[in-house]
Length: 172
Image (cartoon, rainbow, N blue to C red):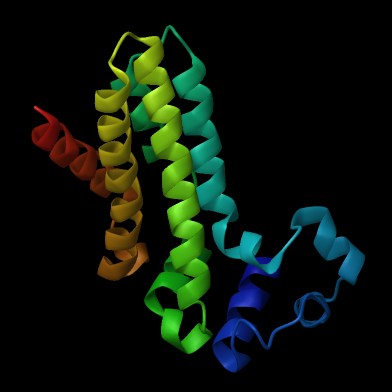
């Protein structure tokens, strides 16, 4: 409910002009209740995506899981629909800057985690970071492509799998 209300308000009046109090009021909860779920407005857009990233990071830490299987964990889970709406309506919502900076931050986080995993597995530092950057870019690009195609009309997991396959091809 909070994410839906926030997205409605972002579309109506813009991201910067929307306060947390307005989001809470729109859903009929207190401002403090909002903070039980989110610590910032930005988290509203990213919370489902971030859950996928957390699952991926946990999988990368599992030495019994192959890198490929760890990367595929990103395919599972709820679709990040609030993020998809923000991607498609970024200009209307006024979230272009927020999306760009948060995207870069998350992509870097994934790239570093993949690189660390590869280094633990014996890959050279430079190659590990190149591969990590490629896979992180593939995952994030897949989410943007999914949103652009019409999030509700396509399975994100299929698009992620295709993006990973493309990264594999580049790295071969």
